Image 1 (cartoon, rainbow, N blue to C red):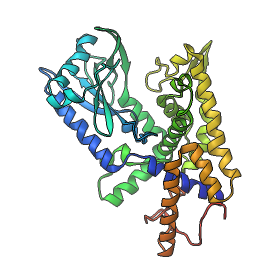
Image 2 (tube, rainbow, N blue to C red):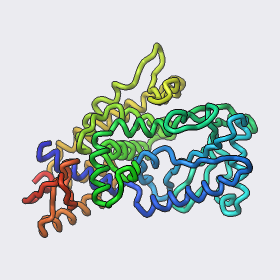
Image 3 (cartoon, rainbow, N blue to C red):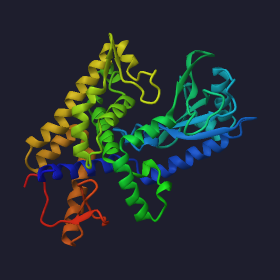
Image 4 (tube, rainbow, N blue to C red):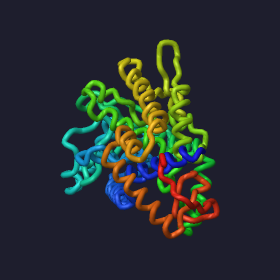
Length: 385
């Protein structure tokens, strides 16, 4: 990395730090879904397995743009011995059990979701996905496909299939080199076994790049027309294409360069149809709706080109922290960027003054944490000076 790229990378690092869910919030979400799981475990004659999925599971969750919005925590409720149940029974066994709990009944969304039951907490909502094993039994890591439900009309449900466990493993494999390196450092610093470090505790450049890309999308579409907003790129497509394009770059800026330049290469054309294939269930097309509403594909490509401009091009035409900050505010939001710039300035000055500023050998960013991969730095490091 050039000096200028390294400087830009450290601003991206601080922005994504402030976008990420706090440890307090993460711990609250974990304890909440464990409590829900314990309650759902009381469904009569049913073995229940509860596990997270989605952005919380992958470590790519971000704060909502507005304080009025909520975090989204996705939870799979697997009824392990109910393979023969109808979709109606699968959905309502879980819903009825939730309604038996006085507190959860009050937290339950008034409107039943197409696939989930939604519980509203103070700062987040939890989508509980009822499901059963697709095959005779569920066995990690081999037989992990699940059958879920899709509400077509009142009391009418269609079967759908998913495999969040295998997607999580695939995602982890896409960043395996950086993940293993950073997991080892985390385990050493926290004196725990490497195998005990969950994915969401590690923030690789891929995870952080996805967080920034999702934030850029949210900011870009927050003031768009309702039609365009409804067709904004969905997170599963951004996440899948980014993971395909990632080549274990060691810093956020390098990851974003590779991802934004290559992610469109993984969008397939099969005849007249666009395909973004589910990497663990090849019959599923994440871009299926693009072939029904062409504006969804148009909006994805529009967002991608804008992200290239805003994240890769424009910042390198700006000199001085004030101009860079204005550029970043346009991409990621005013409040979060102003806080990040102030935080970074204060931390860098303090660390430099007391001689504790280092370059991370893993990410290329600046850090105050010392390990075998860091190198001490001197001099001042303000962007554009």
